[in-house]
Image (cartoon, rainbow, N blue to C red; front, side, top):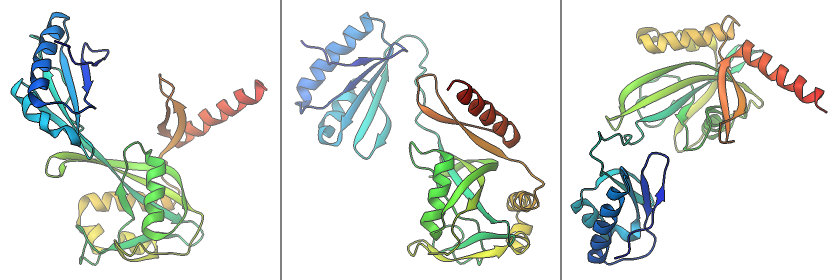
Length: 276
């Protein structure tokens, strides 16, 4: 019987992407034959990607020892470790990345703040920095600017990461939340609130933002608010983004001390000029 066609990875694994409709019984027979073949080849982790239209094959895969690994809107990924060695299949993505934006008007020493219609801060009468979640495939420096524009209509440029915090079991009481506090420089100042999420947005003096009872009573918020104030007073240096590429040539960013980042960028620009 024909084995299932799969793509071999660098870890002696095989990924089978099912695209064509198949009878569940036929799939079961082919899967058993494939598993036998892959064991003989010394394969270890076997992945099966099932689109929504092939959900009829889930039970057959589970009966052959597969378990759920993760799901996306358009597919379900199942996995099975078929080697006698310890199972080293990585867990499903365990973190989400959140961002907060200190949008600072240096000339007035005001920061952009919002009150939300829903969520944790609803009806708490707290003025907070614009926040949000980074999208899949989105860089922190781009995502935080997007969130500011979506919530307030303000166009702003990323400057630095000021700090970050890690909170476990924060999303769905299971996933870890990494939250990056960033500073941005505004290019516009007229506010247009996102009506679906934002009750009100305004520019607030930094001192007034820091001195809110919420920020003074809650230690973590106090720490971050004080960082914001120090940045406004130019007594704090964060991490700037230096564009680079990965080993496989993909665009990426390294976030490092702002002074060091300036030196790296200057050296790169000088090298580029010398090569012309």
